[in-house]
Image (cartoon, rainbow, N blue to C red):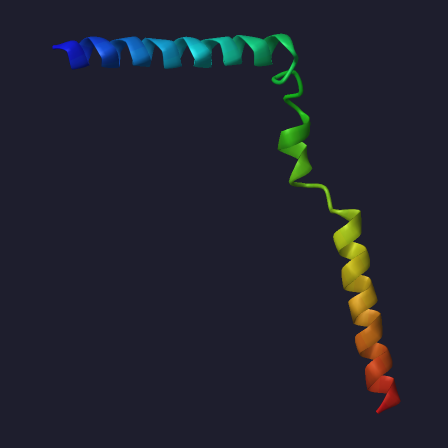
Length: 66
């Protein structure tokens, strides 16, 4: 029985910690931007396109040398 009291106390402590973390995240604006994550998947990354273009140009230049 003593173990049950200990486990209930620990679980209540963990629950209160998560509740405090959630309230803190809402107050600091972590959930404010609802639009950007849904559109981010549709946008191309500039950095990845530049790497692919450079790689393709190098392959073309290597074929021209042969």
